[in-house]
Amino acid sequence: MMAHRAMARWRPSILRAACMSTKSAPIKNSLYSYGEGYLGTLGHGNYSSVEAPKALDAFDGLDLVQASTGWSHTGVVDAHGKAYVFGRTHHFKNVIRAINMHRFAPWFLDFANKVGGHRSVEAFTPVEVTLPEKVVEVACGTTLSLFRTESGSLYANGGNYYGQCGVGHENASVWEAEVVKLPPVQQVAAGYQHVLALTTEGQVYSWGKGERGQLGYGTVNLSAPQQLVALRDKQVRYVDASFNTSLAVTVDGELYVWGKLMGADQHGRKNGEDQITPRLVRTSAPVVAAKSSHFHTLILTEDGRVWVLGRSQAVHLPGDKAVRTNPEVHVSPVAVDVAGVLDPKRIVRLGKGVQDSSILLDDGSVFAWDWKDGVHSIDAVRGFHVESFESGFGTNIFVGRPKTVVANE
Image (cartoon, rainbow, N blue to C red; front, top):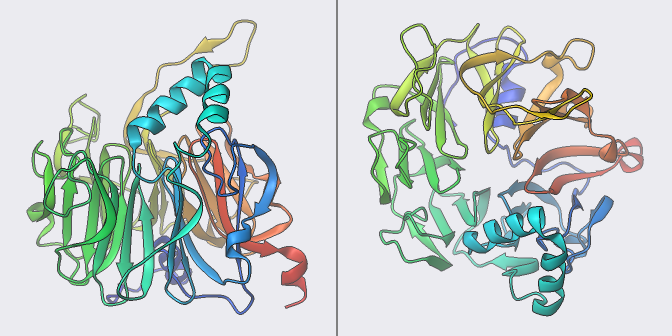
């Protein structure tokens, strides 16, 4: 990891969290899941919903250090550098079909799951991904898995309709993990169907679907990595990707965004256009950390404030008549009110979701944020010391251990 400019005293810990540090704790962490089971992606080998966090038997006895969720699958890394995946790992069209069916005809999806069994789910329970060296990071997009190794090599498999695996072709799927030809990589991020990679030299590469400008150099799709020349003169320390947008944070705490509807005028007001090259976003102070969920990004700044950027959620407002609001795209940061709920200086990690994000504090507690309810505690995990927490469509995944274990450390 490159050297960082000295900032506030609490900055180093949040940077390690934002970049998904893979240092293991003395006590072994397990992987837990809970939520809706209709996609078959909770890792327990069935379509049953799980109300309370349940450890995955497949990881019993292993020390897990990192997990990443996509829409419908999860990637996991253990302390020995082995990587695992479970869920719907390759066919995103089947995922979209199942989500829509659950929304409009859940009874039919239940019938299809009973008749089809596990055939719609590539990995009903965790399976190990065979790679030639130890893995230190996994990043999951929509049926896309990326594995960064200890030497800085990058491997990919999964859905590849737009070349998002980065292996030089657009075959529908890449089943066995293939190497992505890049300089040594220090961090990787997966969006809906595009990828950003950050090299050890602080340079950014992107590939996959680019029709909304999310690759940062026009509106082309690319099946192999291309350097983002607009940021060539910047030292970037972190990248992230959401549905069809992307971001980069420099070593000086500058924030750049680009992609779908991220266009703005010189005053930061939205112009309704796609941003096809990186745009500098004004922030109240240098950016300490950022984490993109599928439709928005949470941002922490050095002055101890929390912000959100991106598309707001369409929600039903309270009242005599339910009113569905239209989503709004925020191209400049909007303040998140955390007063009386949590101390931003205690944040050690941010986690992604679909319509929400997770916020982890230094005591292992977890909070969620969404447009409707703001910041609130996640009651389901109050009995756990959580190291990382992410969610997909109806599923919640976290690495951690019961607080009774922590108390005895």
